[in-house]
Amino acid sequence: MSPAAELKQIADNAFAWIGAGGDSNAGAIITPHGLLVIDSQQLPALAQQFRDALIERTGMPVMRLVNTHGHLDHIAGNAVFGGAPILAHAKTLAALHDGLGPLVDGVWRLDGFEETAKLLWGDNLLELVAPDDPKLDWFKARIGGPEYSGLTITPPTETFADQFEIVLPDDVVRLQYWGPAHSDGDIVVHLVRRKIIFVSDLMFYRRFPWMGDCDLNGWIERLSTILTLDVDTVIPGHGPPTDRAEVARFREIFVLLRKRVDEAIRRGASEAAAMSEVALPEFAHLPRYEEWLAINVKAAYRYLRGAR
Ligand SMILES: [Zn+2]
Image 1 (cartoon, protein in one colour):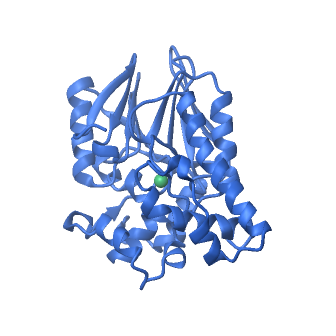
Image 2 (cartoon, helix red, strand yellow; image 1 turned 135 degrees about the horizontal axis):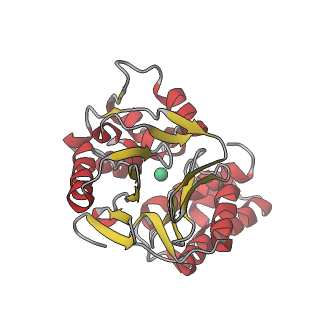
């Protein structure tokens, strides 16, 4: 993992901004009308760095910003892209309104740990990890710095339901929604001729994923769909550019976890028993495995029991 964020050219007129140390990624595609920017980082200062790097490299204005989903680490820099339309899935905008309430002066102001954490890990975070559970300390430390206090979120200004295409002289940018997966409103950005797909948080490169607020079956299906596409380069939500073979390896984590939690349910294990018994030693070397395994098992147990 790169120690500093970096703008990488991944094809003619296409760039990926790879976050430092596995922080969130972003991207940009040059169009005749300016840059189509994909996601806006977890902090405005990082969004500013990303924007400055784009201007230095391309000299072009931003024509539109896409929010691939509504998690904090992909939208907190929206305001930095200064007035460009912000496109997201309709469910992403609806979830932001549900979670954050009415806009004040056109933005949402995040107020404290709980609101910020729910925007990063999902509305049910404090059901999965109770406020007095020591496991919550990791989450508090993760967003405990002063840079995470007082964040404001600028909302998407345009939404679509299934597919949105931007036709370029030599390619098509296909934004697609396939259903709930990592979040309710995940969209992918597929550059068809250049065989590149930005899959955002449908994929974490060699990191154990957070499954707390996901649609487990949906996520597995979406990863299967990516495997059917004619793409050479996959830009994950976190980590370096990769390929379909890596997507297949990542998918195995979910398939195995679902299988083992399902087996625990079938043999009558309680939720607490499943949390302490289910393990994925095959993936124990991945970052975040220790911190997140038991919580992911709890979320999967509830999902598979239909309680979510
Ligand atoms: Zn996410």
